[in-house]
Amino acid sequence: MIEPRLFACSGMKLPTGDPLLAGRKLIELDSVGHEANVNIRFENVAKVFNKHLSNRLVDLLEIAAYVFSADCATSRGTEWTDDHATEAWSRDFAFAIPVRDFEFWDSPEIKSLITEILNFLSNDKYSFAFTTLQRDRQAQQQYLEFGDFEDWPFYEPDRVLMFSGGLDSLAGSIETARDGGKLVLVSHRPVSTLDSRQRQLFHELRKEFPNQLVHIPVWINKETALGREPTQRTRSFLYSALGTVVAESIQARGVRFFENGIVSLNFPVADEALRARASRTTHPAALHLLGQLYSKVTGREFAVDNPYLLKTKADVVAVLSAHNVTHLIGYTCSCAHSMFKSRTQWHCGTCSQCIDRRFAMAAAGLFACDSVTDYVSDVFVGPRKEGQEKNMAVDYVRHATELHCRSDAELAAIFNTELCRAVRYESKRSETAEKIVAMHKRHGEAVARVLQEQIAAHASNIVEGTIDETALLALVVGRKHLEPIWKRFCDRLIHILQKGVPVACSTHKPQDEPHLQEICDGILKSNGHDLAREFPFMRWSSSLTKPDWYVEPLGVLVEAKYVRKKSDLRQISESIAADITKYGDNNFKVLFLVYDPQHLINDESQFSAPIRARDTMIAGFVR
Image (cartoon, rainbow, N blue to C red; front, side, top):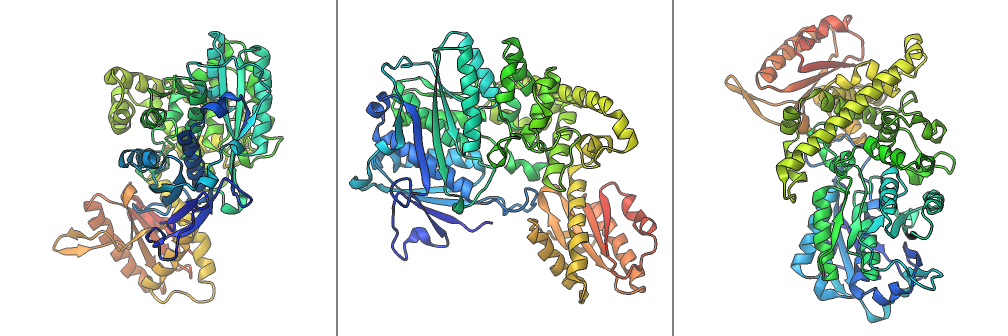
């Protein structure tokens, strides 16, 4: 696990030996003064804000900003495909935060609710210690930058709308504006590159609906020296907190997100090993818990909702088409890595959001409205790096194919846990669950249709072999999306060791198999794979046995075999035969790693034939 952190906030100084510091790395965060490393600024607000910005709201703002900054500053590791149950991917955060309304924030109910929200959103561990903020630090005006408003015509709207600048929030804003309502759009701006596109989009949106919209950008960012982690699982806590500060100031009845249900529910696109990585930023359970917290913060009934829960991305794009605003699509940005891109190309083309955007555009018949030149790498035929980029494409298609091919009843059974969690707070649970399954079926059918169209469009390149072998279409044609994830995971381990072991052993070969295992262990750990060693014990016949490594979430055992001399081959073959039987009888999948530095195995296919005869076992050769 990554080293636990303690974030001391708002100038809080902890004495040496304070119990909060035990076993934790200390990091100081501050949003005020000359040494501030967290920046908070609301732009274009009316003076009514200053009147209604209570101490509790300012506390909420600072807490959310500190949590988000800590999230963005703490790396989750080099890979997203680590495998062990206690994984380096998760993190342990403690916060020491001085607040203005100490009695409210320090109550067990509120602290429990905040930690429940953050644990659900991020799969990290959170704890909070609140103290009373010193009176000389209780200023709040530094966060507000007042606009030039003679009269504020946007008081008491139904909802404050969270405006990300993506397709979903644009479609939601269009639908709301078409109904004649006044729109208060709140945006979070972490970097200037994202800011410019949001401003352009709002400028164009205001042309469509003059006198109906006001845009409140909020800058919350941190010093780059603190670190950079792109997953940002706590962003909806920050976004909704920003919306709540605005909503309470103008007496709106809640905060509204617009995000399609495929992203909001985020059913696992890979096996159980990857489920902790799934973002839950607008999951129905998360929004319900956030609504509970903000109702307590504001002292009134306060809603946090998402009307697009039952729409796919293609459904969202169809909304833009139905309202004749497809010319605004080019001003939107959907990329998960947008803050790290240049001003000329806003989409990486390799993240899941970019993939989903291009598929949705094609499914809705609006492919031409989304310029391919806006993508660093073409989603369908562009090259992808080994590891996460290739896995993202394969997992996206694999998941959609499963949704397309399975029956409603099968999907309900496969995703039963996720469905139960999604409808937990619904009054008509069965009906909503059926609609959720139907939505996922639509998504799978749309992806299948687009794939067929794109393969046909690029048929000549595929036949001639001019398409990059790592491209999404090439991976699909090569049936990579039909391979079980455990086999692709094993392929990844083999690839890492084929690159690393020959270099590590170029001068001195391992003394024996335990020594080889130590070398492999170090190479795998350096690539983010901390496998369980010599576990689990299992009984076969009258004896106990154990593998060299175990990948628990995937049910995969890994055995390393070391061919040092020709006479070893018979003994190793007999050992593998015994492993095939005992592990197979216990229903395990097995990867046999054979280290053969002197190329003593003349025919890999013949040697591995008994292994390949079982569809739950594979072999990898390292030389």
